[in-house]
Image (cartoon, rainbow, N blue to C red; front, top):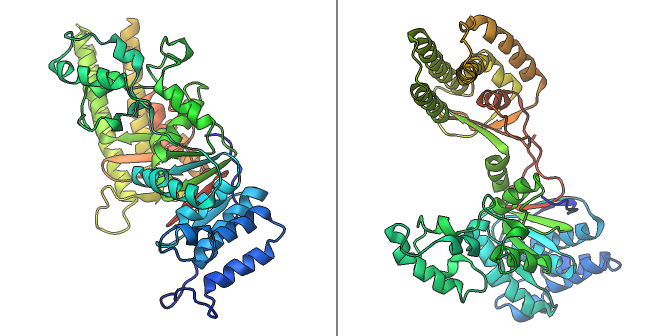
Length: 469
């Protein structure tokens, strides 16, 4: 994610007991008084003053938007955003339903005359901003500006991959959809699959022709200048307002760790709407996920690998089987204890999200160490099998797990709290550190690594937004 100075202060919507009367001559409302007060107080603050004037009862929005009504909470939030654009910092804004928070941050963003990145949690809000709010503000503000609506790579056609597919050489689906996609590719300007209304959403064929970071050749591609992702990025780089969603924001931040494949241009300001959803999305891209299913899948893969290796010695086959059985036992014990440690009542929480702390993780330190030891044993056993060296007798479990237990207990006592999705099926930790090379490292990290703080250089705008400890 690009470094972005953002917004400082806090905003709370005013609580009003009854319905708000419409503005009438001789009877100013709270919104009128608020607009007048803010305008007078910020006479030397150009952006704040201009923003407050837009929301005034006789301002541009009232003249162009049908049934527009000035609201005190909306004006307060808009001017807070404007002040932070000017002075820098971070603003956390909590706005209730009906406040009009979208217009409250879009107006100062447009009037700032700087590039602003807006990230939403849902596709619906992303489309509302681009197809409804942006056109309305373009007509109301009479200020020239450009906006770009960005989606993830997989939403766009890859011309190079399309060129590699030969007609009649693939499955029957190619005969049906390939001509349709080729005809559309010759006339589309965006390459966005949303234009293909007759294309099923879950069509596997699209995965063969869509753009992906893994298959992108970058500037070495023969279709680079025509590439729809390249053109999308060029439009965004020249736009004043760049609209993305949290998934694209985190995916772009993930590829930036490798300094290759990023699509979002650098922006001096960022606004994160529906910010309460960002933590879950960030966990998907930067977190570890360890589950009973994944460990069972690892055990099955180990059994298949042992069978295909052609181990002749009965003693070796028994040692491998014993190591795999130990992995299953330790995994079951770990998740059972993890679930019990975070059960506040006799009711099983299942997939309910709970916050794990050093104190709550302490009882499962031994179980985590036992599981780590079982994973280490699997890894070392197959490493020896691959290298063709004689396999030593597996170490006594208590020696391995006791040392690991001490390490885990020290780590659990020294680290801060982390977010977990605790239950019999999954334990998840948010972190910005790359995944460990081995599964054992992943499990150890799940126990030991602290969660990262939320982005500090962004404006969070949400119906419920709070910092995580």
